[in-house]
Image (tube, one colour):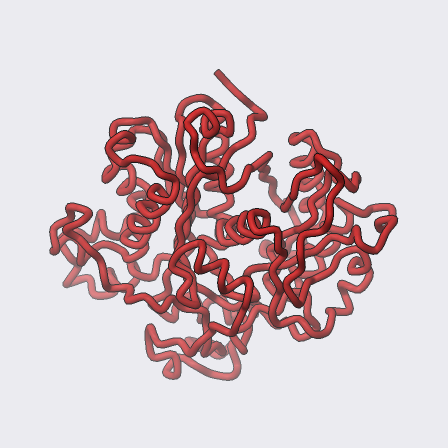
Length: 421
C-alpha cells in the first residue's frame, strides 16, 4: 500500500569525515567548534602534478584537500567474512561503507540477525572511482577479484549480500548530489510499502590526481584548497573525503518499533536545471521551483514564518557561478516579496563544506547529518571562511545570514518544530 506523504524517521547514522570525525557525535564536536582540517595532499605526489597554472596539460593547481586521517588500507576482512586475497582487491570505498553502515545499524539499535532475509533496501551515492583507475592502470597485473572489487554496482550490492537483504540495491551517480538522490530513493521505497527499513549512503575516497587535473582544467577547484561559501574570495570548491549513511524507516513504524528517532524527513524532491549557459551551470529558477514544490508536497508554505525552516543547509560550494545562483534561489523561494517583519526572523544559511570540504559522492548526506545534529542539539553551527560577502550575493543577503559563530536555535511559537532544509 502506498503511503505517499508519510514522514520518514532517521533512526541511525554513521560516518567517517575529516578532522577525526569517525562518528556523528565526533562530527558534531567538530561542527560546534570548527577548526581548519585541510592538509597537504599525501595520497600521491601532489607536487609532481602541481603547476600554478591549472590549465597546463597534465597538472593541477591544488595542493591541499580535506582528507581522512584513517588508514584507508586497514580493514577487518575476517569480521566481514571476506578472504584476505579478495579483500585486497576491494575498493576501500566498499570497505568503509561496510563499516559505516554496520555502525549506523548499531546506532539504530537494530539486530543484524533480525534483519537477515528481510527486504531492506540499499542506495549508495558515488562520484569518483580512484581505486578502479589504479587497479586497471597496469593491465598485465589486474587482480583476480578486480571485477567485483571495483564495480560501482557492488558498492551497494555487497551491503545487501553481507547482511542478506533482498530489497532494492543500487548505486547512484549524479555527481555531487548522488547521496541526496540515494536518500530520496530510499524514502520512495519506504513509502511504497515494499520495505520497512532502508539504508542511504555515500562515499568518496581520493587516491589519484586524475580528478584534480580534470577539474582544474575547467576552474572548478579552489587553488587554496578551501571552500569559501558566498565569500568575495571564493575561488572554487575544495575536495574532501567521507563515507556516511542514514538508517531510515517510516515514522509510524519507528514509533511502533520503539526506535530512537534522530530527526524526521518530511519530504524530498528532485529536479534538473535543464538548459543553462553551460552544462555545469546551475539554474536559480529550477532550484527555487524545487524548494517550493517540496514544501508544498509536505503541506508547508515556504512564505509562512511558522512553516519555513529556521536553518537552510546550502550546497555552498564556494564557486563564482554556483553561489549567487543558490543565494538567489533561496531568496526567491522564501522571500520573493521582501524580508521578514522582524530582524530575528532572518533565515540562517550555512554549508558543511566550509568545515570538511566538498565530499562529492557523500556531500548530500554530510549536509543532512549536519542539519539533523543541529536540530537535535538546538544549535546552528558556524560557517568557516566567511569574512566579506560576494557582491553578487548582496541583493539576496538581507534576509539570509551566514552564522560565523554558533547560534542558539531561534525561539519558536508553541507547537512549531525546529525545521531545517
